[in-house]
Image (cartoon, rainbow, N blue to C red; front, side):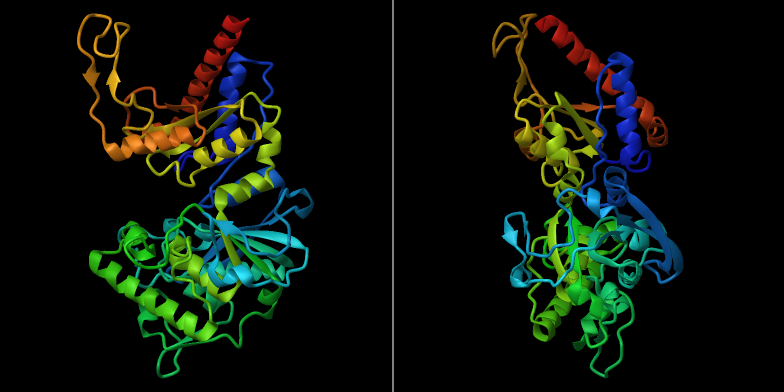
Length: 444
């Protein structure tokens, strides 16, 4: 299971499902594998699956206020395919532009996890304090520096849940880069200032970065700029007005131009460059970074495929299943991985909410009297549907999910639903287990 935002983390969600299954099948062998797709919760999922220790440091939040934030140091010897070795990786079938041919001189060593949301997340702002023009990723850069101080030579940076739209400029500044205007003055924090960027000075960049592999984990493939870029797609979620979106998109465009001129790296069009308010682009520009799907990274580290070989049923899920689920979100990623490892696996997805059209009967409700007639003699009723939702539903099942169930048992306020998530998950998992138990008995 992935986390259910606002109610349960991934570990708690897994335990709730186990509670429900065990209530029906006490002898069932349940293997808990907490998952995440590169957004919030990835640190917790990796520590739970792999082991390691949680660290904290005083850094700056998006508005440059002091805050204590966590990062993780993983037990390297327990990490499946996540090791301190360098090399380009593919993301969504597209190699990482210029980075694909760069070889990092990383040495095997400690692996750190820096979750961007811990220092630069939306939880630090509200409707009165959000400031997408000036919010900075400086604190995330400080966490990376602390990880370097701890001896990390492979750093996993998970992007998602940020309040920032500065293209990772703050990270670069925290790691020693100078972003200068035409008068030679350092730019102030935030994405808007990048419109005045004249040149980049990397002479004072932390030298350890040259020998450090940075792995960017994300669940999106958006480019840096344009109609599907960081500002246009994610800016409004962070409080950006249409005018701000245009301003930020132009500023990030300027940032990309100067990066290509001064650093020789083309990052604007790389899939995933727009993740985390453009932080993907900044990390590609200033470090030996590659981008990969977060779900694949977590699954590899937790050896999900290997653990699926001997299993009969996989129960996965997250807070909401909708048209985006088939494109890099946890349930679809889990289904693809376990079905590839064990084609006979049955995959069930549970969610706090299931969007209209997902898991719906495609065309009509038909009775036992054929396609045009129902059991009571009436004519089959066509179900209103949105074509996009229907397509999403088809994509969802095509990726390996066999059935989808919402866990809400009655209409209720959101606050109550969040408070009762664990019990609702357990109850739905129990019903799923009853169905399988009944099917097994009938088969016998």
